[in-house]
Image 1 (spheres, rainbow, N blue to C red):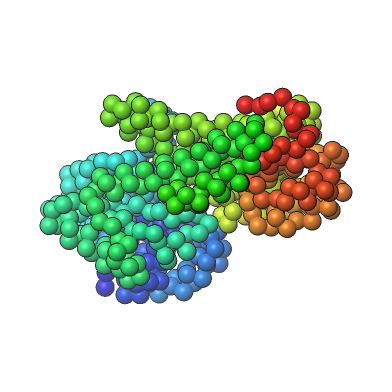
Image 2 (spheres, rainbow, N blue to C red):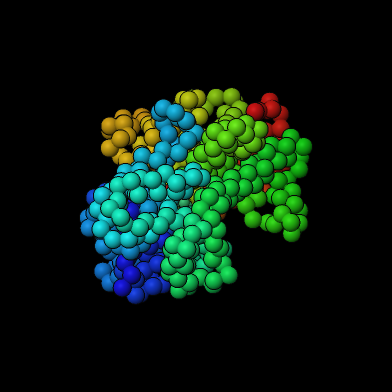
Length: 480
Ligand code: NAI
């Protein structure tokens, strides 16, 4: 029986391995992590991450051919294929701080693999890593091993949170990079055989190591660039009276462009886009390509601009101050159908409003009050490090209350900011909400999900990103 071990039981390791276990009953899959609480949660009825369809997949195979354990060394020792899916955050200190990927977790995993291995293994990079990481990993493994043959493969993950199970069941492609030697090709074939249990072979792309590593960074950069492009257009739409939804529909009809990922919003978030682009920028700089680096830097700059612009719109519309005013924040996760708050635009928007002394009442169907308080108290980039390295029990932000209902959040509020496109926010009883708010009552839709005309009929003053401005906002000074 082939044995797979995955180091890192996070948003990628957990769902990916659960799907491999489901689709390959003859393979034994162990997911290991140093975090005891995470592993306990994977073994409980309340999984550590919220992902539609995940519970069913885990329930079907847990205890049969899918195991979650903290006994990292035992499972690595027994495995034929070791996936490494640990976090690769942005460095916070030292060389490349604020840009380069911090490979501490990766390196310690690689050293441990070298220490405990007694048989040949295929080591698979599942984490997103800088191009050429495989070379460093190879050195760590071969320098420490005792004539053991390690083959390194790059198999970056393209799943999107919120649709992870759907994406894993039916991926656009699976990418496997390996050495161009006979042993390297044999390793590629072994991993290809795993995916071929359910992925059509024409969707399994095999490349050299560096192309696979770089393709992941490139794919995320292209995706984020589309969002920044449409968001940049949204500012121009507001200035000219064009409607960004109509513009992106017209633009997306061009088959060379396509309709997906063209929704204007308050900005992208999530653990990957910003981190991976910063990493790409750093790699460009290290390779003497400052113009290429600057090109990609703009994608992040526009994203930051969009968040600032949103905060400025809120403050400017509400008589240039939100001091002491209650603002309801609907949604805190970085997108719908996940509880993940890493790099969510809600953090920057909330911090911006708190900077102007607003009182915030926050509701998200999947994010705990504890998490929200921690996010608002945390420094940039600290979020992707283990809890024990994060600031100790940060004091909760006094002006923030977290509630468990959108109606409670909006009661007596002066304004509402929609930060996440949760479906339930589309069908709220906005008349009831309006009746219980201070007047004039404002809605700032950061995801363009509400029916603007209906809300205006009720009496709301509505700001919707990239849409023709409410007459109220037209007279406000231009904001940047
Ligand atoms: P995560 O933070 O949810 O999970 C990483 C896990 O690795 C943590 O539970 C941590 O305790 C564990 N870990 C760290 N060092 C370890 C060690 N030495 N031994 C055992 N366990 C260790 O991270 P996530 O989101 O799963 O991301 C993992 C990688 O996948 C990152 O490189 C990320 O860029 C990439 N990725 C993430 C996607 C996403 O949607 N979250 C999508 C595609 C790629």
